[in-house]
Length: 229
Image (cartoon, rainbow, N blue to C red; front, top):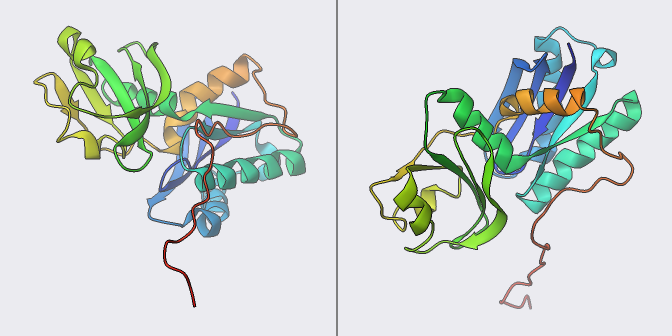
């Protein structure tokens, strides 16, 4: 029964959880801007205490690998790698969009449509993928600009539930009777538990020294338009 510390920082949600044998036994999370750097390690300590664990009792560290926020992913992955080095534990990397879809499907076991997790990538662009009710991927991970014709073919075939912080801004754009939008937060470390256990059992460990988050898009540093005199 592997005991795994799980970290999710791909969006504004800062989240840490503990799972044992694929089930979440402790979780701490908060959705707010720019809290990851100051809150993540505190959240980790809280869930370790809530689970009654010493860090040496962990079997692995799992982290949400992206896509998502450049800064959030850097903080989450850096923290996970630091713990792996310090504790000599393996690192598990969980696809963020798959984790979101799995969380929705676990919460809705009788659902028979498609699920489309979306992470806000600014303006009308989202990081997204499409999954069926079994959790199998139908459309691969991509950065997509949403318009009125997005997913028109898939919406003719089945109902699609759009989830995530990117879905909210698409609700007024995608107009179909088969389109549903969920406001529930699925960017939670608690949704990693089943996937993290599967990765651990399959020994799909990452190289702690060289692992990098999956940003999907390069980070672009912009300069302010107004000059400071």
